[in-house]
Amino acid sequence: MNNENLTIAEQLTAVNDVKHEIKDALVDKGVDMTNVPFTEYPLRVKEIQGDGVEQNFLDFANGNSHITLPKGLTRLRPFLFNPQCIEIWRVTIPEGVTSIEWGSFTNTQIGQVDFPNSLVTINGWAFENSSLFGDINLGSNIQSIGTDAFVGTWVQSITINRPPGSVSGAPWGATNATVMWTG
Image (spheres, rainbow, N blue to C red):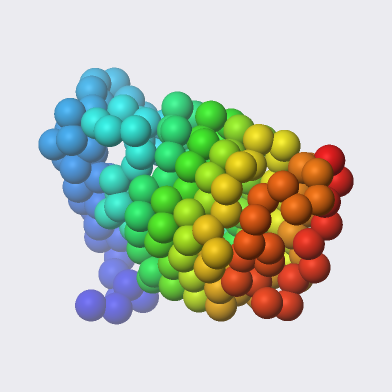
């Protein structure tokens, strides 16, 4: 059905139905949603059992220009973002995340990522064939980057606050990127 043909009341009912589906999915994962307003649903992601975010939960992120992942995460799981998230311009990863697993952003249309200083590891193929572009800035805690972490991306430069050559494998698959060491 075309949304243009729906009345305002029908559109509001559809939005309300989606809101309840998201809430039910979170409750099914063991998250207490008592008295939680819809605007705070993303904050409840960290309560999903495990130390990462469930893959399908972030399907709803499509259409947002800037997503900030919730505090409390320690790693980003494989295939965290659905490859259909085509309209996300920027993702901010919070402090506390130490690892980005393989495939977390593979085949996504996410343009830029703000990395936390707490980040220690970016596994191979983490951003494979994503639309990641521009400049990447990594902090002094980064210890390991998988050989093909940025293969198939549009990254132009990677700046690392570490001594030259202290993280092996540069440019980690980003064949057109310049690597700058600032530590």
